[in-house]
Structure formats: C-alpha cells, structure tokens
Length: 242
Image (cartoon, rainbow, N blue to C red; front, side):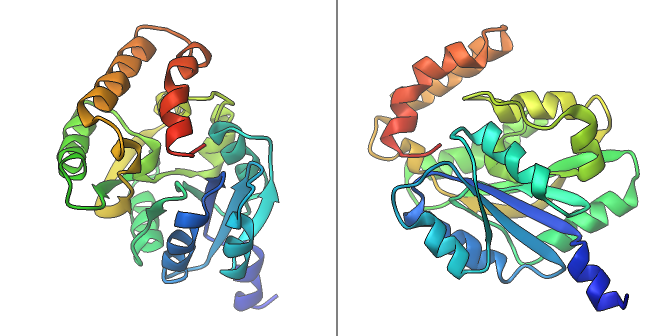
C-alpha cells in the first residue's frame, strides 16, 4: 500500500461534531474545516434534526451518522466510528483555524505524557457577553477548567482508556476532562477557535450567567448532571442547542 492510500485508510485526526437543528451554524463550521491542513476526517453525529443540518454537512464533505439525542452520547457515538489517531470534539457553532491539526500534532509529539488538550477561545460578536466571555475563559483555564466549546482533543488511545464521554445531559465535558487528567496531562494551545455567544443572546446576560455559575458550583459540590439538567433545560431549549 502506498503512502497516499495509507493516509486515506487512517486519518491523523478525526473531528467529531454533535448536532441538533444546527442548519444556521453548521455550514460555517464545516466550511472552515475544509481549510484545515492535514489528513483529517469530519464526522457529524446528528441527534434527529428536523432541519437541513445533515444535508448541509454532507454537501460539505462530512460523514453523517445518526445517534440518540444528547451531546455526550452523540460524541461517544462519533468516537466509536472515528478512525483517527487523535480525536477533536467541536461544537456545531465553533470554527477551527486552518492550522488546528498541525498544532495538535506538534503538541502531542513534543510530550508522550500529554493525553489531550484544548484551544484558546474567542466568542464572536462585539457585544458585552462576547467580550466578557472571551476575557473570562482564560481566567477559568488558570483554575484548570476546560469546556467543550474550546475544542477538546484527545489521543484515541487515551479516549478508549478512560471510557470516553458519558451520556450526561450536561457537564459531560467537565466530567470527561476530570477523568482524562488521570491518564495524562493536558496542553492548552494558544491559537483560538471561534464560537458563538448565542447562549447569552436574547436573554438577560446577568441572569443567564448567574444560572450558569450556580450550576457549575452545584456540579463541583457533587450534584449529579441529570439533576442539574432540569435547571439548565430552559436555557438549552431557548438556544436550540443539544
């Protein structure tokens, strides 16, 4: 088998995107991935969209698989069919830079003890929420907090070792990172992904942020994500995001 055929057989990076009625955002996300350099595959895991999400993603070269609804469950379904040596989990409203795959490969090659990592993040728009969140996330990172909208990546071997994402309805990212750190360190890449600030748009920013902060505190206090999801449901429904 020649080199080209071998690369086609085993991509270096699998990018997994969970979706649910994301027609408004998925085009920009997958179009940006078309410019990512390297041998990658894009897997969109849909939870039963009633719009054109899957059609748009397929037209832009993504592999489509169907799953039961739930971000953690969908990402795990995507990981199970992914062929890449490294997995990158990207939200449907988040765009990656062209050198994303190269940056990940360089970071993992430098240190075999690194199990995974994430990117810097910039929230789109010029509103107060976007500016504040773009400032806030680096501060949270200093506390060791790592969220899914920052583009979490992981060696496929490490993903399998910890059992992957749990089917939690909320905070599946925090749970995943907590378990991932048990089998290796995490690296933070200075290049940024750009994500939507829509969860705070159309609502009182102070109220939405306060609710988000309270839920965070309850999670770290030991309240199960399935209980917390009942409080989070109104926010998630309002922004039509899984």
